[in-house]
Amino acid sequence: MAKEIEPLGIERFPIRLVIMAKQTKTSLAQKRVSRKSKYPIAAAIDRFIHRVRDTSLSAHTFIPLAAQIRKQQSEKLGKEIEKIKVSLEHEPDDSILESKEIEKTYQTLRMAERISSSKLPQTVERSLFLGLFSAFDVFTGDLISAIYDKKPELFNSMGKTISVAEILKYSSINDLKKVILNDKIETFRRNSYVEQFKELESDFDIKLREFPHWPNFVECAQRRNILMHSDGIVSEQYLKVCQDEGYKIPSDLITGTQLKLGAEYFFSSCDLMIEIAVKLGQTLWRKVFPEELEDAESHLTKVIYDCLEREKWKLTLILGEFSINQKKSGKEINKRIDIINYSIALKYSEQKDKVRSFLSKYDWSSQVNDLKLAEAVMLEDYDKAAEVMIKIGKQGELVTRTGYHIWPLFREFRATKQFAQAYQKVYDVPFITDLKEATNSVQTQLAEGMQKDIEGNKFSQTDNSLT
Image: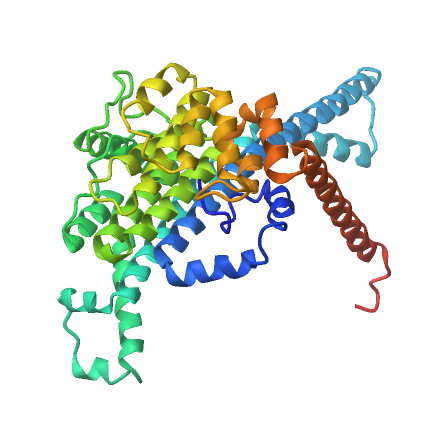
């Protein structure tokens, strides 16, 4: 679980804030800013994740809306055409119609023809999909900038020759470095994604493509290319690049086939892009700045927790496995947290039968009480969990009052008598009382937001002749 000072999701932020207000006076905004300034790679990863989440939410919202709009327009025009047909059937063949009536008929027919050819939902879907790669291009630029800005000695390895005349154009070495770095990033972006990863491997002497979903990423990028340049028509290049990178192409997929997206492919691509960015950013972070290993671990734990809190079970398992299998580790407790979060994802991704055997691979007897609590909860030994909860008290190494409210670990435990009794004994207040307070606070915030919307709408109702 992430530390309590970290914002772990906008959707549940008000509830978190209500409980946290009882524990800390630290400004969340200040913590967020300081983290970004100190760990630019973490900031780059976070920005990209939020861009992908925005894209995913936009798809959930606007693609169905586009389909609904198209359906409504079709139904409306269908009724208009039916009225025109009925009207024309009552007119003799030698009738002379008014010009306005004729023009209205043709206008309706033109609109109907246009709507029947419209692919509004598909256009929105494709635009959002292409936007994933625009965001990824921004991310790789941010990542490279973060590395070179924080470790300027890397400029020495570029091997770039600059004339004296060119150097004299700039007022400082820093200005010159910015230009050189921008040129490197622009050149980097013009390459294919396969070439980009090969370049990063060469620059930092590290393997970046040896993970199971690399072929899927290559296929996704190639699909992006053919959607952008050839309306999704499969080309020889698409087939060759995918095959060269280990992607298993279906036997019925041949040159000339038109590929589409669809909801399943679209949303799995969103998760895939997050996976790629996190693994790429984390791997380079640990390689280039080994002294920040514990900070990189903490950030990865936070990302995994965010996925867990949003019930992205599959992505949690992928990133959790990546974290657990790291050869070098800093704090053992970070790894243990990821093990617990991984087991939670197993439980809620219909793999509950694997939880006990997975946890049994690790010794929990020597761990802090917080982790013993987590093990007991995962094994559904709620009597033991309540005992450990009381031992931990108001503030543990990991678990706090907030954690009992928001950590998915306690999802089922929260609904037991053992939990209710232990919570009241620890905090001298029933759990439901805190839950009511959080609910009332969120309701108040929602009402205040609605009032602001009402005030804002008044501007549209005023006379704008003087503006």
